[in-house]
Image 1 (spheres, helix red, strand yellow):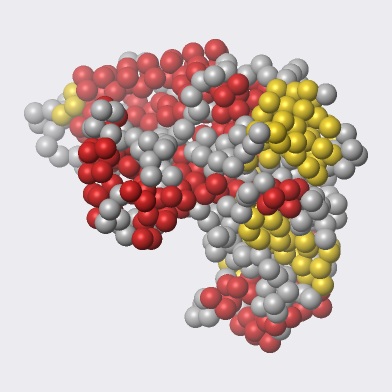
Image 2 (cartoon, helix red, strand yellow):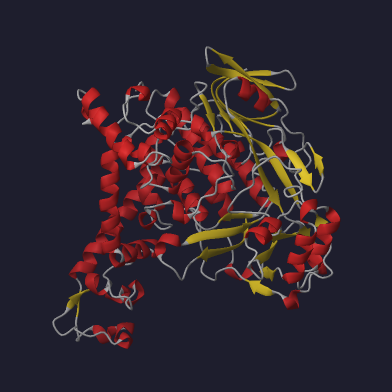
Amino acid sequence: MKYDIIVVGGGHAGCEAAAAASKQGFKTALITSNKTNIADMPCNPSIGGTAKGIVVREIDALGGLMGVIADKSHLQIKMLNSGKGPAVKSLRAQGDKITYPKNMVKALESIKTLDILEEMVEDLIVEDNTIKGVVCDSKKTYLCDILILTTGTYLKSKILVGSTHKEEGPHGETSSKHLSDKLRKLGFEIQRLKTGTPQRIDPNTVDYSKLTEELGDMQPWTFSFDIEPQYDVNEQRKCYLVYTNEKTHQIIRDNLTKSAMYGGYAEGIGPRYCPSIEDKVVRFADKERHQLFLEPESDFYPDLYLQGFSTSMPIDVQEQMVHSLVGLEDAKILKYAYAIEYDAINPLQLMPSLETKVIKNLFTAGQINGTSGYEEAAGQGLIAGINAGLKLKGKDPLILKRNESYIGVLIDDLVTKGTKEPYRLLTSRAEYRLILRHDNADLRLRRYGYECGVVTEEQYNNLLTKEAHIESLTQELKTITINNNNVSKNILSSLEIDCLSSGISAYNLLKRPQVKMEHLVEYLQRDYTPEVLEIVEISIKYEGYIAKTIREVEKMLKLESKKIPKDIDYDKIQNLASEARQKLKTVRPATVAQATRISGVNPTDISILTVYLKREYSKDSNNE
């Protein structure tokens, strides 16, 4: 059978890729080895988190599914870093591991141009260095114009517990045994990565009196810009704070060589920013304790997820470790922790569109590209699905810049810097994070989604209305004068504001630290949504910092406009440092700006490259 686009893998990347491709009107197939594992959350049962919550908002702004599904499926939700600046605020929801996948499957099945097939893909059909289809272990063949691989942790996956291992996926499923070998033969560099998951605990065996409750916010939140909150703030499930202690650490130190990682049983490299508990104890030996959380996984079964306690220790050692925790002395372990290692490709072999440089019309997204996390996978899948459709339409790909989205930062980091360990998004990775906020994701990206055909007319019109209201409120605040005669009108009088005898505009008054938008709403002539009030307040309060960031962005965009020809021969550029030459030949950056972000390429190399481009390609206005 022939499809326009085939997506292999039903994880978070595959779901978004398949939906984005089929929404553009292309006949699409999502091929997964087990339909019941579509949108599965084998590790942390949460969506969002620091930086990641903003990614979910961006996915929603671009017409993706994750935000809406998370809003319909969570047990608890809260805004992280709410007491800090707007640049680091992010939503995090405790997802229901049963409800989330069911809602995702329902959403996918509602798309008329999408077929869901239950097969294990083990080979690729490639002709003239161009993808033509896939071959399954059932010997069935499916042809396509474009293929998107989103294989997650299933390429030669291996479960590790101490010195033992099993060649299987997270739930004991069969792993893909041959596909990564095929990719290697086609010219891909294959690397071995590792991640892990902690124990699941019987909630009836926990002494909650010794633990600290972690509650959801009483203010309702949504990831999606298009739906109202789907939950009662008073009925959110509780989480609990737990800490390791010296006894825990001593057990780990005494048994360190028994873990798969420190005992030499693991090949894969683990995530630096989501390490196992034994790795934390070794790397942060000065820490007296480490923070853990007990989190519910679902309303349909009792397991509690012990976040932060990932390990590959043997079962008997895990028993000792868990029982050393205060409140879990008598805890029953329902499922033991394990590490899982798997094959991934070198992301330097990808173009910014997520099409591979090795095989034409082959895209990859998610953990196969070296990332960790559901959100990073979903963001890549969405971009891969959009760009697959755009390529079939004969249009340029959607390449999000670093000043436009965290998704753009993620993809640029992968294709420019590569990764030797599971990559995780952090706010610190985004140099323009003040303008990449939770509140403005739709203003940044929804137009792109509409132009690409994955955002509806209604969603786009809602954006235009919101933009008009933002402009209206901004101008209204400039026309309102606050003075000693009307300051007593509301709560402003309690703030002891001075210098009002001559009057001051509400716009400028809002710049003062003690004044908030809520103090000014009574002066407004019309009602505005909380979202509009928030974004205008942030824009005014941080006006100077935002303007500075925009100036930095403008400098970067000038370098982005300096294109580097695809056929450039770096060996002809004299005086380039040997490391810079090698890195430039490997990455083959599209612009001078991208070249500046390659590790090992220093400012002197950039100057030499720029001079060369001016001299050799002066006829190309893009390089002037």
